[in-house]
Length: 269
Image (cartoon, rainbow, N blue to C red; front, side, top):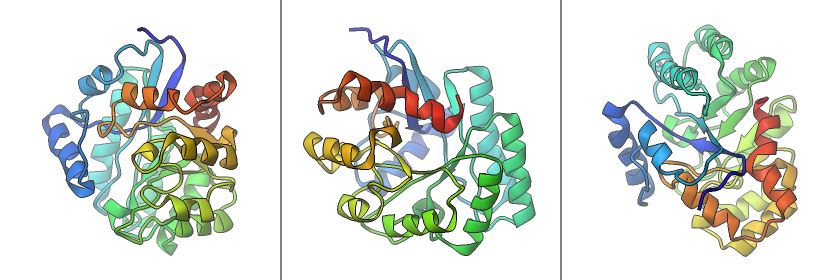
């Protein structure tokens, strides 16, 4: 059945065709989970079949402290969005990049249409509340670029909800999005430190670790106006994630906020 509801999937990843499968496999190998998509642009559309009014926030984290490397990844995302307005690009940086070069890259990406920043400190191998990173987050706040942080990993201490909580205190002016319902695989810690705080979050991968009843309770506790829909494509397809969220008992008003209205506000769409 065709779905005409407006949907913005705020948590997706795509790569150039020649590296898409390899990049997607790197993620699933790290997390030891299966994937539903292949990481390509064609694949993201196939994974949203039946959703007639859908847009995708696309991102990837800069893995090396190399400005040229960052620019290649950012340019791909920006050019993809320029070619198709169903895509909304986030840029990235690595906190070990030279500070002035990192700031210049953020300014360049903003000028070219980037709507935010993606940080995955578990993959980038730094503590999310590292002092160097915080100085660059301040620049993101100055540029009015929200940051989508990967939040939580039971195997590392890089992106814990507790560390992200420290950013709230240090950077009240920054729009923080703590992905995966504020703490992938560590939702008890997420509830202790981040649920109910001013940060935004998304629903991506939350139903891997909890049932729909608990997810609904966390959404209520956090505040419906701070929760956005996400799939984490290519791990889950957008349609699969949508069908999952449809089962947790949201009202029509709550669905409108989660599926699109909150994202419009956060990313200035």
